[in-house]
Image (cartoon, rainbow, N blue to C red):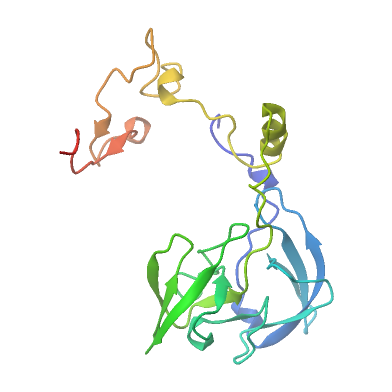
Length: 222
């Protein structure tokens, strides 16, 4: 339990709900979530149900968004990738239809719909990698809110300390070779060194499976 994050700080698991297909929703509130880098919005659907979604840039309380309605291309709407025009910015993209959204969820990020094909959609991710998705995968229109948060420097360690205390992450993270021998396979010794090979087999037990796992090659590239 020593190296597990404080899961109680995760307020909610935000994913698409297929039961909301074809409905419209009103934005009730914009909230902060310590587990995320972006704000989240509380929305209420026509049938009275409420849920939380990742907030896009420019969304305001009182605006109406649609879920799964074709032909409605505006910020915050959720639609199939196959019905989104080329050049549109999208976020929170499903990897497979129905998984709820896996890609492009961090603050200030967006992907671009590049090409539409029969049953497939090519999207350029923030890393500039082109990825082909099933045209039935859901995605939200717009750019994830909260961009620019990294532009202001922390200046001092105390600011970073208070930021990370509110996040469900392990902080600070220490170099493995600087740990004690009971905390990591590379720990212990009179100075910082692994003390054993850093390349391990794929079948290595979990407690020892650290370093270069099943590396295809090692050594200096010539």
